[in-house]
Image (cartoon, rainbow, N blue to C red; front, side, top):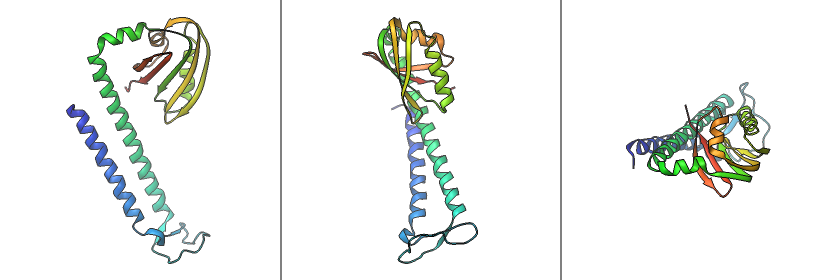
Length: 189
């Protein structure tokens, strides 16, 4: 295993362990934790069998922000790791890349692509697809976890990877190509 990949995996493991410790610390009171708002008043809730220590809502919000930050760091680290692994695989499979660039697609094509960090960047990508030669219809079928599945209908065969490189402003890597399916990952800059 590449040393950098091993290092990144170790860092991901460290962050997961830190998050698990945070969750365990917050859960150590079990069902006896009582939530109060900033003014100190108890919110209406079903009576607990035995009230425990009070946790201020500001503390809970801070805990939520830390969890969100950890999750974003984990996702970013994971995507960087995947990008490095893909780049090393592409370097080893250079002859296959030329074939992918020239592979022709026609009819209905399923595009799996991402990451998109907002709906606006997805919309801009969708608009770029309409500039492809022979593109008759572009429909976003699904968008979740920063990745989209897009249905593209082509009226005649085109070398899709090559044409995408011509119309897109972003660099991308081909994860999979074939059987009227194309999966792309945008390269991180």
